[in-house]
Image (cartoon, rainbow, N blue to C red; front, side):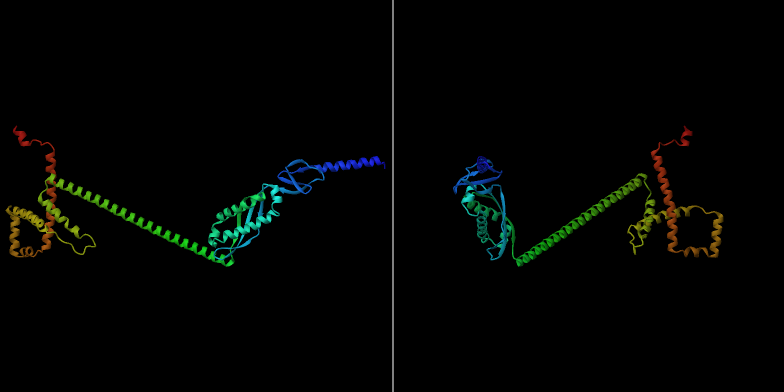
Length: 367
């Protein structure tokens, strides 16, 4: 082969190598640290970058996006001497690629160890119950310590979260029993409160029912009394307006007496003291009728019949043998007839008083 051609090929290869060594393309969200003869020179930004061939070389390639680091569960002793395993999750981001590469040998291990140390300091001042209920406080204190320590390493800790807190198995069983007892207690309290409210509502309902029933009975009694009062008033006005005879009143008084014993539940009944006055009035009325009848002359046949019976002697003995019950029945019948006649006369007089009086025939004839 011609030496000129060989030299040309070698020159081309060297040029290609130099060009390839000079141009560096950095992806987005990446940072490259460049060293020149073993000393930090600069950090390449995303895009096309030119370096000195052979003299410059890439030392570290770093990702500046936010990273997630999950540590393994670490045993931590609480203030009440209980060992709990705590698992944390760390969110961090590289802000200074040069410091992250040259200020600390392994920033992930350094962060992990710092997290464990800070957790033991924080949890050591809390008991188990406070540890389980104070996650926000633990997170804030842990983040403050990590952010202060990792700032000089070119790393910013954005967030620290406690993923799990695992107490011992015996403590878990005790906590489950405690929670079960608390739930049973709350259930019993709620049940008692429900029964109490139900009894209160039932009592209030019964009270309202009794009140409404009493008010209804009161209104009914008032209306019934008003009706009876109006009925009595109307009867009283009718009696006084029609100017009823005392005989009628006495008879009506006697007529109402059987109603006192009309009920089946009455075993005895009381006769009012005014009964004697009513009987006296009826008797007086019938006495007047008997006297009027004795003044009327008897017919000859009746006189003869009376003489015959007196001779035989049977009729006077029968009249003398009447019982008091027979007399009372006859008197009641006669009083009923007299009362009906008196009521008719009273109604006729009332109608006559209301209508204009017509002249009598005799007066008309004399005129």
